[in-house]
Amino acid sequence: MDKAAVKLKKGEGRTLKSGGMWVYDNEIDSITGDYTNGDIIAVHDFDDYYMGCGFINTNSKITVRIMSRMKGQEIDREFLDGRVKDAWEYRKKTVDTGSCRVIFGEADFLPGIVIDKFSHVLVVQSLALGIERMKDTIIELLKTCMDKDGIKIRGVYERSDGKIRSREGMERVKGFIGEPFDTKVEIVENGVKYMVDIAQGQKTGFFLDQKYNREAIKKLCRGADVLDCFTHTGSFALNAGLAGAKNVIGVDASELGIKQAEENALLNGLQDTVHFRCADVFELLPELEKQDKKFDVIILDPPAFTKSRNSIKNAIKGYREINLRAMKLLRNGGYLATCSCSHFMTPELFSDTLGQAAKNTRKRLRQVEYRTQAPDHPILWSAEESYYLKFFIFQVCDER
Image 1 (cartoon, rainbow, N blue to C red):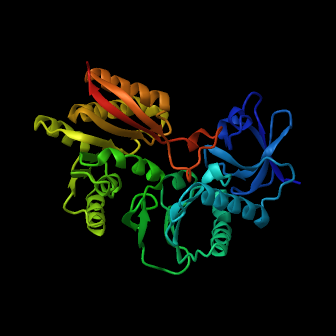
Image 2: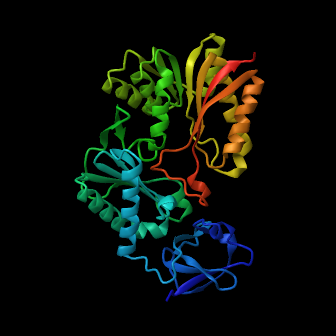
Image 3: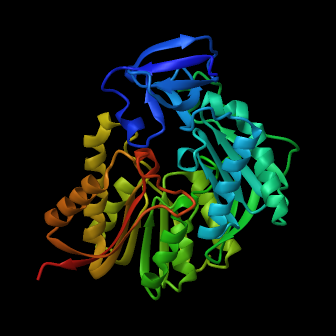
């Protein structure tokens, strides 16, 4: 029997009732019984109807993260083993597992933990107190799964250094779990080689969610002049170069990112075709326009301009500005690949913003395709936060 329980206020828990996995602090009427933050407790509706169990942390606005809806379910090693096996089997069916996200938090029913696989190395982000207690067991179980498939994991590195840890009342940590190893890891994705710096790179070192979107732009880039904005470590630019682009310019404000991108270009023998500039994209695009530069393909892969509902208006301005500038820099009939990785920038809002940019530049957008994140970042319906990446490819034409 559960020793502690949360009771919801009447009329609350709408997210939970529609299949979500979070209980917010302002939805809770009372907490009864003895518990310590991080413990598994029961969740009941206002009328005592059992809704599931999950781990509690009263330091967090997300006070309870649901682990199971089955009454009487023990959250033990056997339970975690089932979750981990399901996550790994799903990846084997849906993506190239050479490098992929193996566990994606709530979307794999393991809330608060992310694990990426880069070749034979795992990178872990533990973002919630309850899952932190289970972290070592989850890693052990995952390594066992992979070992059965002949994959020997040579090291595990932790990147639990995000701000969200502070909001959970946890220290931000970074370092080896187990024996040290070389944290620069070579991977191959879509035939492109990358040296991933899992210790110093952004988040876990490399953005795996764009894997198949990078593949999708290749066919547009043969013989083309390409501009890749917010290039990070050069991923879209290198895919364009490998596809046979005539000339590629990758731009990013991070000196470290540009240095890594240049190393990746050398690694792929693309240094004569793919070049990089350290610059602020918002300043560079108007400058290129003044120089009357034109491109056949432009890629916009910016960081999230908004991480809360409060900053949506400024985010819209940012997305509209860069897309408007990009449309002006494209030759008539050129292609624009543009995306938003902010959960709060909904597909409808992003579409409207792109439409405004086209209207302001007197351009017509012919949609080639609409894509989201790669399947190793599954979108769990009812868990809105798991659907965050919106990726459009357009042909941009002058009004006629």
